[in-house]
Amino acid sequence: MLTFINIFNQASILTINIFAIFVNITKKLKQKVERRLKENLGNWGQFSI
Image 1 (tube, rainbow, N blue to C red):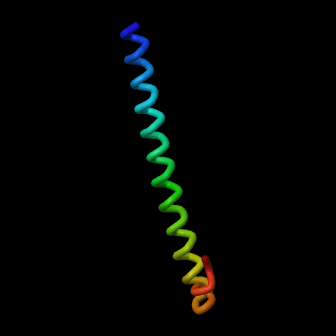
Image 2 (cartoon, rainbow, N blue to C red; image 1 turned 180 degrees about the vertical axis):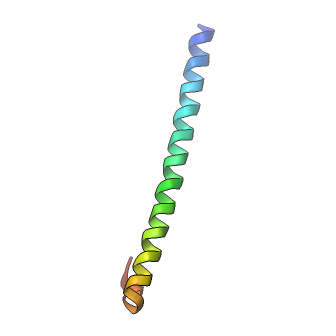
Image 3 (cartoon, helix red, strand yellow; image 1 turned 90 degrees about the vertical axis):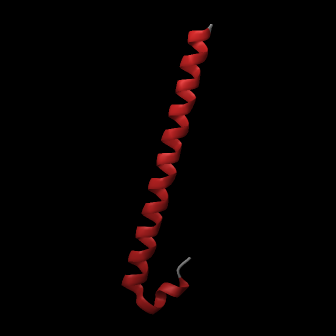
């Protein structure tokens, strides 16, 4: 029983870590895209969401 709990805990920690990494990657990508849009569009950048 204890080994099952240990495996379950490790799996959930791993899932949380993967999720955190995924969130960080999406944030960075979003920032890159927004920056690129602003550079490309210039004045039109203020209308981008």
